[in-house]
Length: 264
Ligand code: T3D
Image 1 (cartoon, rainbow, N blue to C red):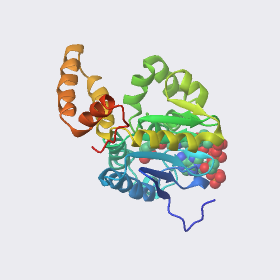
Image 2: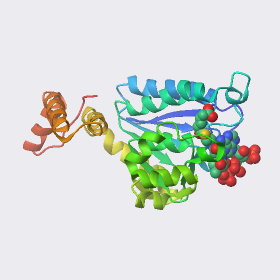
Image 3: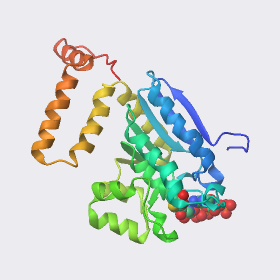
Image 4: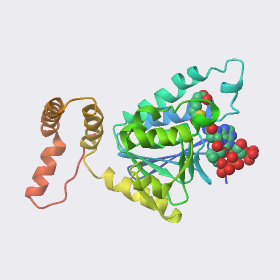
């Protein structure tokens, strides 16, 4: 249970895994200016810390995140300008997640709505509790999907399902989200954090730089034709092949020992 004195973002570390917990449970962890002021620096800090090799984001209480706090003075005040909030808050947030040098797991513990849904979907792997759900809530309040939704949804689902979710703003249950390919995995509620942390620990022991380069290559290849994507693979593989982790991975395989990866 959080108190008024608790920070709206909790930061903890378990071995090589950094965990960021959105912590405004009474308002379903919706984003405020104060939360953004902590979240982006926390992402930058994790990115800059060489001891961090995987990141988990989750929410406190019964929700993951209900998107923008629609009561926040930054939005409702005289300076309130939705486009400006999106540009100053959600663009840097979405870009920071996509540029993390370590794999990012969203452990979606409950409802993820609006920018909260797309914040999760922008992560590398999304694991949801069985009771969780995803809502592109924007159309209900006269807005379009943001925090990367217009880019992510059609790529994850195809145009028909992307538009279906965005136009209806209907709730999508976690199991259905797995079935249609929106997220990676759905587990029993009680198993969510253990599953997410075990996966994060597994990824943390893997060649971090190659994992981040895999994300980057997939994203970059999405805008290329086949031949250009093959050329990009060759160029990036060339760089990784000269790095210590690839030498270590190959040497460990040949010597039949467990590799120790250090690149980041
Ligand atoms: O605006 C910009 O800057 C542009 C950026 C936009 C990005 C966006 O994210 S736009 C979309 C914003 N989000 C929403 O529209 C979702 C609004 N919330 C809901 O539709 C529902 O709360 C949920 C479907 C997520 C959950 O429903 P339910 O029935 O489980 O919970 P509830 O009773 O509606 O909410 C519980 C409390 O959380 C309630 O407060 P109360 O009555 O107990 O004092 C509710 O007002 C509060 N809450 C939920 N979502 C928000 C919120 N308070 C502020 N902002 C919210 N987004």
